[in-house]
Length: 198
Image (cartoon, one colour):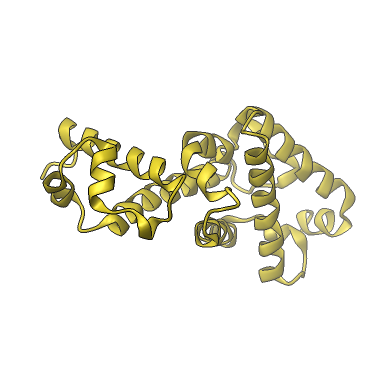
């Protein structure tokens, strides 16, 4: 089956949108294929042409989302040989644009009624990205796992607050604020200045 065929793309989009609509009021485990197909306006046979079960559809959605998150996270690193947080250009930050693009999913992730497993999937991915690409070497000799957890929770905190505010602020505004917070951290930390001058 050609994954680029317009009919396949439209069918998958309909299934992904239906899944997100249902996840606003139900747990993943409680969604049946019949209910999903009714919501998407397709028949069960079409569903099974593409997926073995609802979990398989969710995994595909999460995979695409996390890949886009990774691409968004590493965007600022593509513009410099070494990223120094105090010199971060806000226009290169893409994580908030990513969240806006996938806003329906993030509304579910940050909903207080949602399973924590969604939140932790995102948290683990952000920690992993920070480990692989981070500016943590600028922080001196701190405990790296604790530092990465601290940084990841700071990003998650911004995302949760943005969600609680109904995503009212623009991604560009959020970029500016993150860059500002990173500059404050650098201006107040001797260890950062010492480490970056090596």
